[in-house]
Image 1 (cartoon, one colour):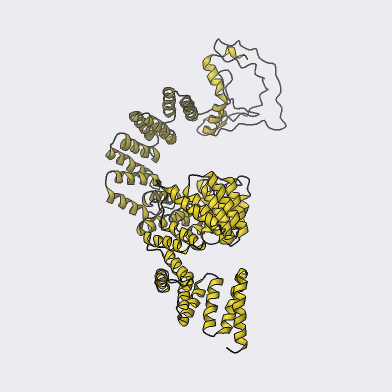
Image 2 (tube, helix red, strand yellow):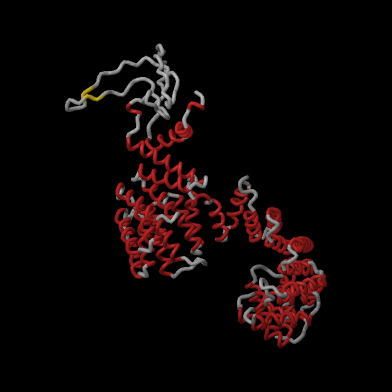
Length: 638
């Protein structure tokens, strides 16, 4: 068959015949029969072929088969004869012609044919729309709804397109025709309500349609939401609240009703920061828990409840739901379950269960589809940092930086961990590279200043702090706040520039008199050097008043009492400091040993110095001298 024999209409029909065959099969569910095994058709002489008409689609000579013997018609009751289905192999033709009709049981009903043609018309409209022909698209979409008016989804899609093109009257006609054909479909009422409200500004008519949707499908929460939103639009806040109360009392056993309800409440109640009133929070939690109660072994339901708990800052509840969902081991099927494993891992980390999260996250990060995700390696770095595994944290922060060197935070993470890992030179190198990459970022310059200070390159650090001041002039994205002056003051103290340090720390206090760090640092700096001891004591007491359980501040207070010759008070505060510190601190133990030595408690002093020596062997010369003197005093009975 040559293409030049096919008219334009025939070309179109052949071009979509494959697509239409699929659409028809989908719309009707018709089966395509296959030949029975062991049976071969018996060839018979081909009949004479009638020449094709001028505009007929010549399909060639059909190979005839010997018809199988047919059973006689059998009575179906009341004397009506029903012909049996034909025997032998049968085939559904993708485009049957007048010359070769399909078997009766393979022919489409008029309704099924219209449904298939409607889907094809809608697809034709989509193609026309993509090609920039809106008029042809609209015509095709209208034809689709005329062929299958009972298809609510199709009607809504077409109405949406018509409304976009500012044809609300046509959209209403399409929706009303669909309602007439399928009066129990709620979506057509809901979208009709939206057309009335948004395009024609007729909220009363919109309310009528929304209420009809609710009446047609009382367990379909989208209908409830449409009514509630219209009450809000009309300023009927009380009625909207009453509707929510009514929904909360529903006896629905459909988990989708409660999930839809929960999503709606989350949209109207939760603020951007995840907060809501206690009453609103309770209502949302009740709704999601009802969904879980109705379908406790559905991973999607559990995951959606977990997602709400995350937004509501309820980490323990989120972990509970995610953990239950993961244990079901169900295949991902929607947005809620698509990233379930990762959500579970992050929930473990957020609930201080990093030891369990690390191996799961390591396995997850080894997945080829995930191996280039910077955020996973950043999280691994954080978890190893929390676990005190410095080298592992550095390794993963390096990987995070390699994957995304364009984010300053990744440089900061690595440099900070290198400082904690006592690799200040590496931290300086990291931040020097960052400064070359981000020369206009004062915060990067500050990071380099801190790294230089930790590497004891004090003069370079002080110059870099001064550079930060210059770089921030005329900028609004970074201010020189109390924290900046505190860090600069600490660096100045470590550089031995005590007067400069005191000036900077006092400026930090002036800018923010409610933070205790600067009070404690300045007070301890003076006490340790025997300068301004009484004023220093007042500063330290101020810090302790703000944070009475801070071990470092209690150590400063104890050291102040020691310098002031008040040894009993000093011992009391230093013992409290030891208890409050998260772990043994060499400096606190050294101070306590000094106080015990002054009180003549040599055995206690020796014990504390030995503990300090194990923690800080780099101070061995200083500690061992005091330790030896205490042992001699003890041996002499003094």
